[in-house]
Image 1: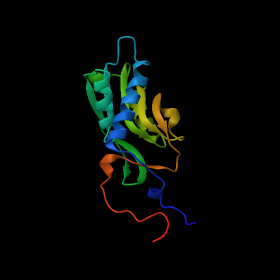
Image 2: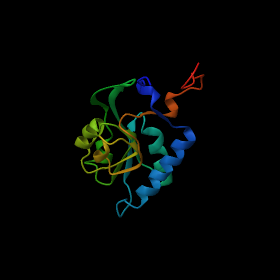
Image 3: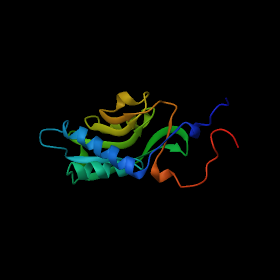
Image 4: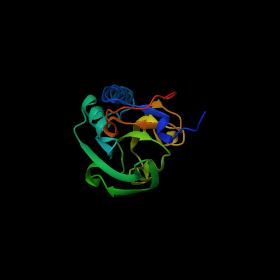
Length: 165
């Protein structure tokens, strides 16, 4: 058997699956919300935007903002850096704020976000073992060597069979 390329051990997520999983995340979060409810949702762009929108809708959270952290260039990970911060008047130190992302991989992105909003509750739809401790709530764990293909990264096209010609 030959070694697989990183994209060959893939977990393909459709829009329907992402929607179901983000709703499941919202259901888990309703039991962990502060007494007065969540003050705001902060989506980590870009992957956290779709799940954050779904969570905000399900939990009736109207204040939504973003934090942009760049840590990937295609499938290569680099040091994360904040390129857009949320409104500090809205989020403060993170107390009562829900941070949503699609995935925690190594946790490096969340280290940067948690440094800015240390009291926030971090939720991701998917979690890998190396970054799981950075997340308060998640739905599905996948192995560290699995590459998740999100619907915004995919297009329908022919794929060679796994075996044979």
